[in-house]
Amino acid sequence: SPFTGKPKAKRWDHYITVEGKARHPSALKGAAEHLKKPGLISLGGGLPLAENFPIEEISIKVPTAPHFSEKDARESGKILTAGKYDASEGSSVYDLAIALNYAQGTGSAQMIRFITEHTELVCNPAYADWGCVLTVGSTSSLDKGLRTFCERGDVVLAEEYTYSSAVESAAALGVNFIPIKMDSEGLLPEEMDDILNTWDEKSRGARKPHVLYTVPTGQNPTGATQSATRRKAIYKVAQKHDIYIFEDEPYFFLQMQPYTGPDSPSAPPPASNEAFLKTLVPTYLSLDVDGRVMRMDSFSKVIAPGTRVGWVTASEQIIERIVRANESSVQNPSGLSQIVLFKLLDEHWGHAGYFQWLINLRMEYTRRRDTLLDACEKFLPKDLVSWNPPAAGMFLWMKVDYHKHPAASRKTILEIEDEIYLAAVEEGVLVAKGSWFIAQRGDFVPEELFFRATFAAESQDKMTHAIERFGAAVRKTFGPE
Ligand code: PMP
Ligand code: PLP
Image 1: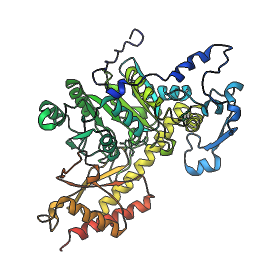
Image 2: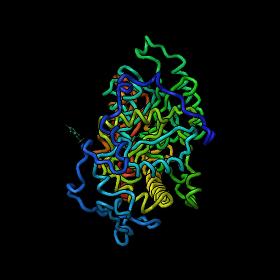
Image 3: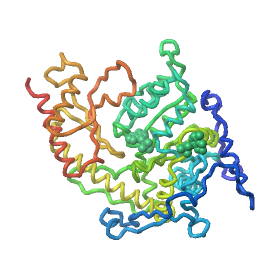
């Protein structure tokens, strides 16, 4: 581009599906451009008059940076109010008359501006013609990505253990996941290259994969975070085989402080927003010189899952396809949700305040993770259970050495997994079975035994008890028969 000196994204026509190509602009939404004409009287659209919306005003009470605790918010939180005609009356750029009406498939202009600025600050994409579109969360973003890139019968590369709902979303569209072996830093680029080099359509029953689905940071369920070096190596393999990357990053801002161990002093918090942003692993979007990445962000883990607001960042060609897909499904996230987020993020916190909120969340998740890890050090039998301290996300992935089970030669790994799972429930703790997250569906049998525990869901006190109970359940299961 003559303006930024950045290259333009590649075109993806060769991968866009029959469904993706069949999407045409909405005739009704197209007419909206004429509404800019001064004095125009519109009898064209089907937009109801705001007069008939039975909501005059909404107020939300929220914390003010840097006083983010629930107590601060409750006792001295700020009340933000959105009225019906704030924009026409000049007190805001967004109001209920706008938010409660039909809008464009991109999401409101107001939220898209905030999101685009935020993405530029955090990711600073490496090519010129990128853009963002609001979605109803990453679940919906992935559904639209799959529909745009994968035909029935296609396969997608993914971490060998992955987010089970992603596998289910793909399966419903006739798309299966091909597992890539992982280590503590997530998927292995050499394994990915090997799968692609040796792909045989006949024996695999599918054309060579052209999409990678990855959760690079605080991966669900393994908690693994890919280092910058790992990301660059994976991106290189993607370039070599012309792979398009779906980067699913709901935990990106749950990158925690370095884990220093049970008895060492903790690392000091980032001294400024700039220092905070420097601690974060570079995103695929920021490495992506080709425009081969569709990044999915979500407010679910950093504000609240029920907001049902997320966004996709990709090249303009792909953003346009997703806007079309929005037009014929959800249209856009709820206007109520958008105006609440806009009041909080843009008008109250601003970018700087939002980063402070994210630093606050980083410290909160660090404390939670450290509590869980301290409990593991104290209560888990180390000869049977091992784990890597997660650097991001909300999950601890515990490996159980099933070979030491007294009936290991007679029982299958899935039987032993079930035995431990039920023994844990008996002791009073629920953990997730590793086998729920196997990327490859069908009769695939795992070689190792894992359980997933979250440090997001319970009080610190309860988490410690929970790990004590899990330790007891493992000891019982592995005791003499
Ligand atoms: N179906 C019909 C027949 C309609 O007229 C409209 C709105 N104009 C819709 C569906 C869209 O409904 P919604 O806003 O609930 O998506
Ligand atoms: N992607 C991953 C990897 C997740 O773990 C989750 C939630 O658990 C989601 C997507 C869902 O995100 P959203 O609430 O934005 O749809």
